[in-house]
Length: 513
Image 1 (cartoon, helix red, strand yellow):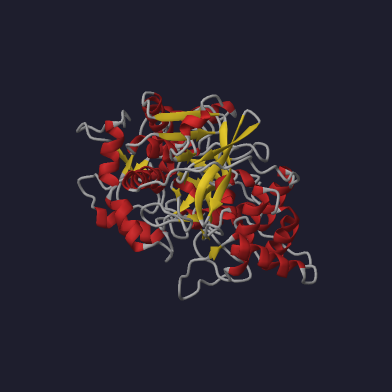
Image 2 (image 1 turned 90 degrees about the horizontal axis):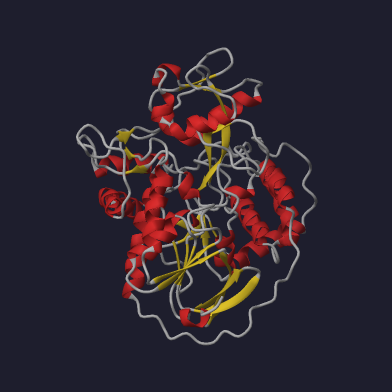
């Protein structure tokens, strides 16, 4: 880490996905960008297939997009956030094009638009058919590398936030096995979601919620941690812990239908994701196969429309033009995260968050398809604008980094724990047992802390809403309320659980392998 001292005082952006790259590009001041992997790799943004939702069609309006977002969010969206982020959608598409993103053109030369579930209009701008995330990342990575004021530290991750007098005073960074303390009064967490904590996920291996843990240990409020979105149609099969190939919702939008082994259509494939995921999980649990039949929709031309998915199918010996694709749900997106305002500010002064790591209020209890790339880019712009406007105090020396406490939970055990307890269907016994199992590890293991906070929030939400479904509380409460947790309150709740009698074994909720 030669020359590290010269970076003191610059804002530090943790995360090399779309949210982190865009924050760095859209601000005017020098900054440091931490990318745990080589820039552009191991980022969920690069895997995004469908595209970016924006009201740019001739028959569309921002008001319609807002209404669809609110409906999908099942009462927990923050209306002001929805209006601001969705309202910036057309400018976001234009801004990405200005940064070099090449969207697939329609007949009129404007971006072609796909239809996806729970959207009332075709409004998904896409690139490379189903390679939108990869194209966006290609363009933004090239821009970041060509921007001298952005110092990129590859193979570096945020280890800890240093807080003094109630505000961020620095960060501890790990690179090449070396821990360095860097003084700064501004840190942006854009580290992505928590999917890699589950056994079946479309997320890359780095999506373990470590940014959320850093924020929580610094005192930040985490909001709506219980809301996990299962994508209904991941390609079935593959080992636990390995990312599942996604079969984009745009395939269903193009006319593909969900059928079982008899050829019968058993659910509306264009219903909201939580509804479709539960229907598929129930059909699988009843002993059926679930298949996505695209043959009538793409008429022998599947690879031209969805080249990435076609390659993933070919690797499994599947030809979608000749046979239906076996699918099943997998963890895809975390609606909860670090609570922020519209400037991306958390409850800890000097700490911002954007992208999947943040809880902005856009997604509510169930994210509307393709609103994630929109949120990542738009909210990165909000954070960048806010950082450009603030005066950052002169950094003070931090001293030596805090030694690692060591210890932790095995990742395979964590997968099994959360897969059973916090899957598509949940109940009190399973959630309480999972929280107890994780409790001894939360002081030393960031993954265990995030998993425990997710289970605790799910325990306290005694209703079913959006991506959170309780078999023991199947009804939806008449009043929607956000959940909020701090690490201090989580410790109190865990202590209370540990003092109670052991929870008897029961169904932990539906595991989706």
